[in-house]
Length: 460
Image (tube, rainbow, N blue to C red; front, side):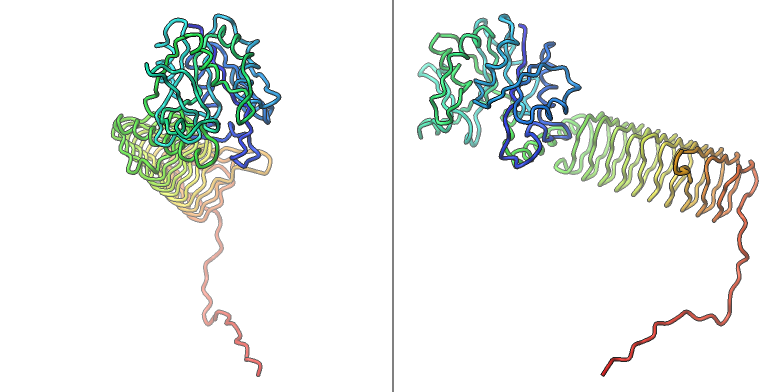
């Protein structure tokens, strides 16, 4: 079967009350339409046809990195009219899979089942039984339980509105049928639109088999019309991701307080505390512990890493048995060797840290290479930016750096060197020596008193 996905994405989305097109609002860190495009690309080797309209150029520019054929619906006259615009792009032998840019969670498995179970010369559609069918067209069946039509809610009688089986609008239809039926559609309905749903009654009149499949969970077919619906789908999606991880051996303290906005690959016996956010591609090795309120993006953690509370890990590569945080920030280009310790209020950027090195308190180390078994004292910073260029700091193995030290890059600290607290290092430091910058003599002044505030006399 040659499947040609067509995604309808021309609607304005007035109920979102936004300047942003509805299909560009994000779920799990990706635009709604992007979810649907990715699903379509997994089902077919044909580039999807995307019907666009309202703010079309904004949508095209946002998703231009995907292979797609874009067709404009200049007037929004209904779903049938939208699909009519794509007829010239369809080959007669195609089976057209109709999807929607605001129905982001329809699964590949459900669509494969729909397509693979479709009898020859039939048309296929999804249906669902919803606990609250309001807003959806209802499925009409005859006494033999065959689908004979769909009635939109605004056109439905009270008895028809009582039907619980609804039409999500997702179809698989031979293109030759669409080329015959779409020009026949009429707009004599409450909306004054050309309904795509009318092809079902046309198929029934011609005794063409209408094959129906239900999704595994009804949330797959739910669309987004406002921000409330978007938030509900977000929580459903996040709970699905959390359950998948838990079934793979991950402990999640509260699945309702985990947000995955990318791809996560987690090993066994990983523990994830509450309010963790994961973006991009994140790999978490066996036995890692992720503390509460942690942000992870585009990073790789080897086994048995501990990330303590309130830490930000962004674009970092962390070897086994490292301890990070609390309140640490690792920025892109950070690479930690095994058993490194990065403590509270420490920031690293574009820095390689050697095995068993400790940077435990209130420090900034950027554009640096730090050796093994180094201890960097509290309040130490690398001054790596001169206002135009970044410069490197090189620190050898077994170096001890005292608290409140400034390393003015470019500078090299020799192996085994010791730097006294409060030093400002502007030249290379020789190995295995104590180096400290000149200090003023400390002295105390007897009899000195702190100034006191003069109490003002109230004005009578």
